[in-house]
Image 1 (cartoon, rainbow, N blue to C red):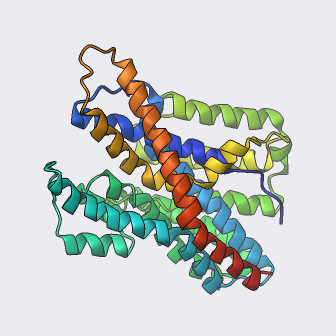
Image 2 (image 1 turned 135 degrees about the horizontal axis):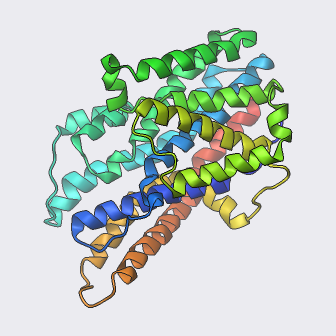
Length: 358
């Protein structure tokens, strides 16, 4: 198996993009100063899409390599996914319902509940939070939509790749990806768009990973100029409106291609460039927690700062303060969660990996 470079710094940067996407939204709702005039403050959803591409890139690659070695086990695959995803996911699920249905009423903070509690629990517990968010249940619960999409994809992809003969995996996935992409954008299947069933992002990441394993991207890997163009294009994507398209089909197609090429570039065509910061590496390790906890941290910071009067203070001070404190508090919470909660399950996952994966 080819050794991948450290992708944790990318995970952390993507998580930060999600945070600065959500900060202005809550500040605006609560009457606090906010800033969202730069394009980078509107790229939170796109950052999640890149997470999807990265997930597909890693997961499908691992399954493909296991298939090539005739060692793929659906049981082992799901066991590892459960140990990584479920503990923190369900912690946030139950805390979110407690927060909006119990804590806010106790604090006399009004918040509309537009759903039946039983329905909400069923939708989140059984991993369809991307449907549940249509009820606007609150940011803590709304961020779960992306975890739901990933879990739905894992449920589909593992048995699918299990039954496909290993020599036909790439062709089969390519056909499935193209067909699903076209179906997704047909008006008759509008529910796929409404509920964000964007599985083609994971599939695109997986396809380019398989192409690399089949040594079909040598020309791309050896072209340093092309690698630089891909990286610069990705930076422009997140910092400008150059890649904004009104047509959803075009937007999703360009995003799939660009993100897949970017993940490939920093993984296999990076020309020995790699971010080796221990701090960024650790922040990437806890990025799952950063993503899951950041709305909780944001609510805490906003609740505290609402007690202060910023009338005679320049707006940039509270804006900077809210963003900085939210990121810092999120990292602190995520650190303790990783060290004293998630790590227990990760150790179980590693022990299980050692006993079952050759």
